[in-house]
Amino acid sequence: MAGCCDHDVRFEGVSDAYKRRLWLVIAINAAMFAVEMSAGQAAQSQALKADALDFLGDALTYGLSLAVIGMSLRVRATAALVKGMSLMAMGLWVLGTTLYRVLYTGVPEAEIMGLIGFLALGANLASVLLLMAYKDGDANVRSVWLCSRNDAIGNVAVMLAALGVWGTASGWPDLIVAGLMAALFVNSSVQIIRQSLQERRAAALGDQNRAA
Ligand SMILES: [Zn+2]
Image (cartoon, rainbow, N blue to C red; front, side):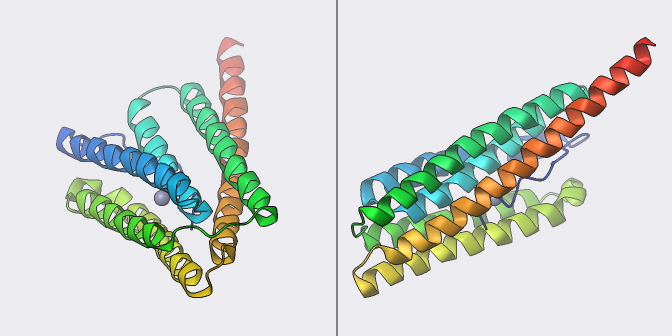
């Protein structure tokens, strides 16, 4: 679900045409992060905010992967570390505010939740179509596909939460879905941070060996 797309994506050697599509996908994901996060605030829906995290994660993953093409392992690992730490900060914030809402629960606006969840699904489908149409993205096609499928599951979870909120007139379905997604997200950001620290150590060792 949330934070599924955190694996290292390498775009070394992709064509300029494919890069242009990637920038378009990055723009879609960044815009959807802003839309879903502010809709989550407006509708008082934690599930929307948790789902928005994945758009941020994907925009950062693709953006950084493109920006660090051809750079040293140390630079790539540092970029991944910064990404992991910002994702963790966002994830902890959503998780914390979700726990807070367990105590001071209200009823989010189910219509906005359902509508934005559907829009998010459309944005993810558009992204996968943009990336899969290109044959020179072959190596990445499988990971893009898996990632988008998991993202779609997250979008559907938000729509189910909206249905649950609407049916029960309570905030619980929203909080349960949000709590699960935010916890998964924090967990995967820990893995990103751990892996990037290992890579930084490996890069430092490599530098030492070269100097010796
Ligand atoms: Zn994703």
